[in-house]
Length: 329
Image (cartoon, rainbow, N blue to C red; front, side, top):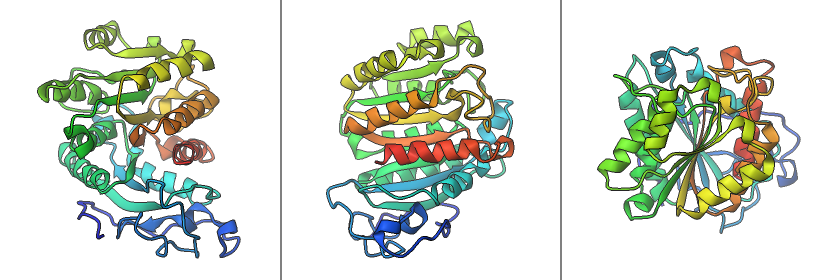
């Protein structure tokens, strides 16, 4: 089956990484990822490096880059997130490939000349097409304006249009519920709330890792009015986090997970627009990823706010890569 035509600006580029051998026992990500040219569930023979056949029952995953920092610019943050998709791929490439699923790369949607809304629409169309083709989609942002692009794709998919209850789980120090004249990296979840209301659906949104010091009373009031569930960064003990996520998952049929890397401590994720003074420990965030993946409800995931210009030794990019790898295991 030929994949639906995707509106991307940059086609998939060659992946690189350490070479240890041709056999499946030596395989790394760069050898396993194939271009999204045919539905990746159809054949593993196109995988580079002589990859062995994968579990035919595993849902194939597709990566899509969203090269944008226009939303961060509008939100008066540190720009540079447009370079993140390439940095995350570079960090994924050398990782040993232990996944029991096919993985493809669909290329990048690029936001240029300030045309954020048009870029979000193109990315959303691509995500919806890949979801309807039976894939688990992973968007590599980009500033957190990536989230509204993801939402357009998820909301446009047959799963959600068919009536399944959508849950949006955000791992983030911020609500991103700002009321602004122009959409930005600070507005995506208010945009989603309004879109869900217009569609006659309940807005099911939860945030894990909220920094009280970095969200105004107005944002807390908006969250309360919209029925947003949240857990503060200082309350993110492992057991409490597990219960919070489990309760949220119990009330939804499909899940869109969005990871803003500024949810992590600045020592772990220095390469973001707004480094966290406190943050949620990486083992806790990784456990959430494993819990969500094991639920069977994960429909789409994105990773946002990596800013390679402010990274140290590629630390934040490596963390992003590890989280993607964990989610797809």
